[in-house]
Structures are given as C-alpha cells and as structure tokens.
Image (cartoon, rainbow, N blue to C red; front, side, top):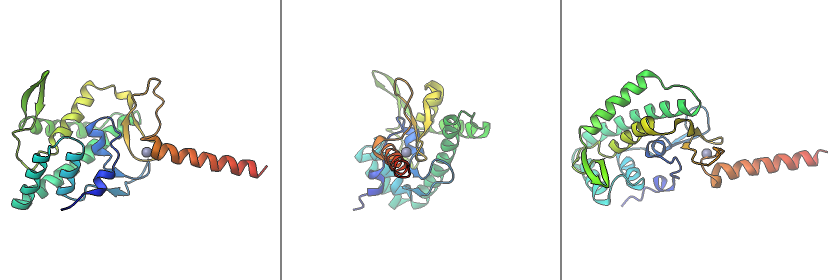
Length: 206
Ligand SMILES: [Zn+2]
C-alpha cells in the first residue's frame, strides 16, 4: 500500500484549507514553483485525508473510484489543478496588496456553485455545508473551493501574506501582524542561519 510520504511531510501552515491547498506546490517566493506533491488523483485524495476533509472511509471510496473509473478521476484531478492555479492567483494577488482578476473570481464563483450543488446542510451547532452524500470524483476538492470563498467573503484579507523564504501563503494571526515566515522551523530558521553567517562574515572582514 502506498504511504504518500511526500504528502504527509507537507506542513499545513496556511491557517485555511484553501491556502494549504495552494501550498501543495513548493519553491522560491517569486517565480514558478519547483515541486508539486499532487502528482495524481491518489495524491489528491491522500492530501485531502491529511488535511482533514476526507474521512478514512471517504478516502478508501475515492481510491476505489480511481480503480473503477480512472477517466472520471483523471478529469477531476485536472480540474483540481486548474482550481489550484486560480486560488494561487487570487491569494497571491491579495498577499501582495493587489486585487485578483475578475476572470479568476468568476471561475471561482462557478466552482463554488458546482460545489454547493453537491453539498448538504448538516447541523453542527449552527448549520454547515458538508459533502457526505457526494460520491463523485470531485469530492476531495469541494471543501477546498468553499473554504476559499469563505475566506474571501468573511476573512480579514490584509492578514493574508506570502512567506519571505518560500512560495507558501498563510494567514497572519499574530497580534501585531508580524509573522514573516510560513514556519519558524523551516524558512524562519533558514533566515536566522543566513543572517548569522552574514554577520560572522562582516566581523571577520573587519
Ligand atoms: Zn516559507
């Protein structure tokens, strides 16, 4: 059985499901990504399970669907990549103080209409959208799309930021909005090490 180690090594540091979905591609802060953990439908399913939007039973059902109807799951995988491109565009624009393009927002609206068309309202305190009855190949993606729209409509948009050391985007929940890194363990530590080396070099050259 596949263990999907690359997916499980990812840090979920976005603070929002849609941002964590954008963060499935890694690389430098600007320019094209240099790696992507979502290499196929099974990886998409594994990520959705890892991110907490599919139960084990739903993951197993999605993987069965991939065996039974590979054309449908491949098409869903291609759609998920397009959606990720849109979310990447929308949230990267907001992180740099720009407005997302009208066309990206219109396509996201279409994705949301499609997602809600397969949702149901369940009581969890107040009512929430769930996709428990959705057995289609697009099931892993729907909560991601909905999280994106919720963030756009109810979130504090000026807290959406890009990491200074990599291409990850995240919500800065810190009190004084001073978070600069996706994670102190990764980019924060790399930056501290870089500064330490630079300071030593300055001292040595005196
Ligand atoms: Zn980073």
